[in-house]
Image 1 (cartoon, helix red, strand yellow):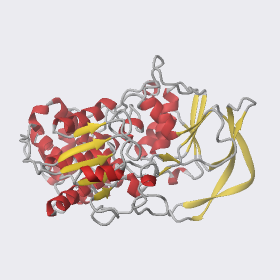
Image 2 (cartoon, one colour):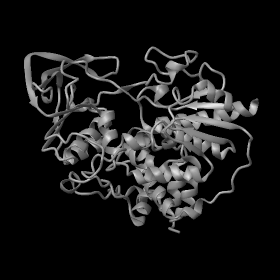
Image 3 (cartoon, rainbow, N blue to C red):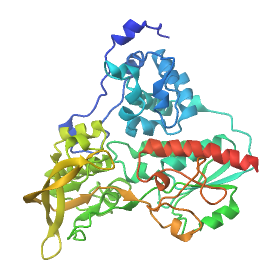
Image 4 (cartoon, rainbow, N blue to C red):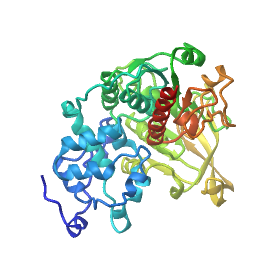
Length: 468
């Protein structure tokens, strides 16, 4: 055990940098960019924590991980204790340690961030999660007593998997129904291998299955089974099927060959391994790839295009850099990898040849006006500023909406004007015993917010079935 350091000694420790692949190397492969802390670096970084009495970092965490506890245990070199503490709070720690926007959540409210860099909470979370998977024996827990209750979960994404883990721990018989052929949802089809290795996701799923959770893939609720059929078989149902319906620009030429939604583009590459030239899944390998949008999905798409062999891959965004919603780390990594940014530019038309293949993107320069409802300054067209970006692939990454496949078959479910399911403070829908969470309720949001919904709603479902 390391002896505790004084506050002065802790404040003198600088933030430990995350080792990573060099940009010139990683831009040509799909291996993970960040390579993780060593045990020594993790312990040094953990010693930077001031162990605040009022831990604001926990308030910033949607799944309420006991952050000071697991960091203190890492600082002491007690990785086994840290693993047990983390796994009790977060069943997908190796995922959140990689893709959670810590800079706006737990690290964003860390008191050390006021005068220096915040504690690298996400990096430490990733370290202990990865350590846990190298030492699975530390989590051999006694199975809980069976409640005799059966729970159905629709969707094996972050919200559904988190709810499954929580409900299983509470002794319920849990079955997860997944429409695709692999569990993981956006973790498998949306986030690229270089940010979140798929083996990591499958290890997380495997741990849930080992704990007794049942999984049925290739099941489309709304087609294979109706929601009412699930209600007849289970004591409660949790809908967590996400928001997977792409939003397009509604400009001329958008139906030309070479235009992808980000959903389709990333699904082909990530889930169906189109990056493998010997694979069977087709995807266009553009020479010049234009991605419209500036969120994390847009960064993933542009960086994927680069790795797929594009001579030039660029972002087209109608606002300025200051308004970009993507994580700072993802923007930084994209810049390092040579992604070109076209700021204050709005597409007007997709151009094509006689065979209807994409040849370019006709755009217009924009200026920033007054703030809109989002709080960001509204882009205003600059007259006479039209120009053409030459490209042969266009990826549209401007958001998603709720997929109506399930809700259209169950008109009793109350929806809002965007087609998202409405829930009460407990996460219950207008149908008794049917709960919902994640993007199907929130609209497109982050992995960690979906997980927070899964964790909270699982507890509400437990209380509901036990009260009956």
